[in-house]
Length: 114
Image (cartoon, rainbow, N blue to C red; front, side):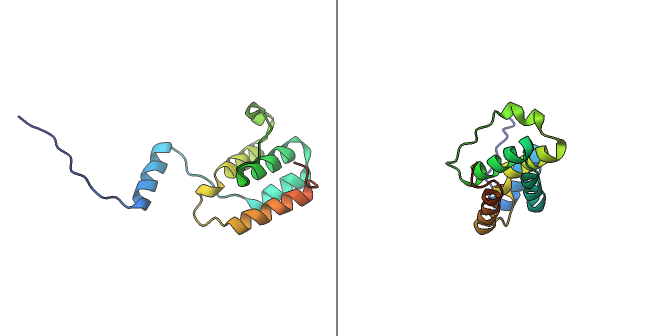
């Protein structure tokens, strides 16, 4: 009789995260802050969508009041920025202070009305 028995192994967090990333099939991109701010300043539907998305992602209790089906209205650049916003806390080295500063810039551009 041939029994296959696996033994428990320890695995580093970095190895585990790399394995999960590989299994999920994508690598999150770092947030292009300057481009995000430019797009928010440009206004329009995409600018407001991205501004609201950022604030909602940063302030986890802030609602995101856009139907997600409306991502079809975003161009490729805005869609990429939206994904970057969704994943900014998964990028190593993120800083709450820098995210706060981005939020404040967005609020200043939009007049605080999100």
